[in-house]
Image (cartoon, rainbow, N blue to C red):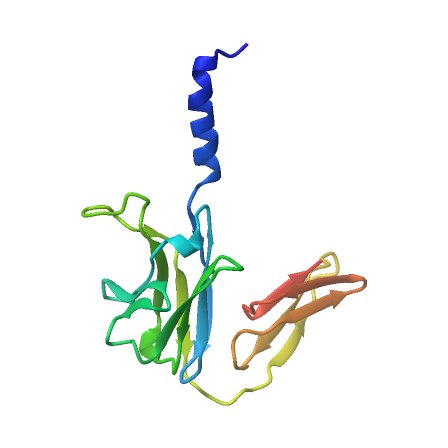
Length: 196
């Protein structure tokens, strides 16, 4: 039988377990120079409407760079270097904080982080960051169909086969390899698939 003296401690533990702040971002995104891209940050464990949110980026060889500070449409601030090319929004229905980048540049290749302050935010308190999304920006060029090669098993005892696709653009394609009734799908192409 538990003593009632432990009840407040137990309730505090349960409450903290249910209120863990999570900022979930896709690991990678790919964009094309000159085009538009939206980065997303799924929030949970807090009321998105109640917090000021931030976007930062870190490009190769550079430190963390502030992009956006956003509370509401009437209270938002942008780094002047980017304010004509970026926009931020809170999608309260889906608990999503987004960053839109217009007219992508090769120099936008960087890791992008959403962040929010802790509940007791003040001088010296650190922001809570998401894991970050690595953005790759590819040069704009004409689309090209892939060259596809079937690579048979190397011997008769092996049932593995592979499919090789080369020389295609853009790089994000969906491929399906079928062998009999079995299918294997790869949504983000790495050029080589196998099935058994």
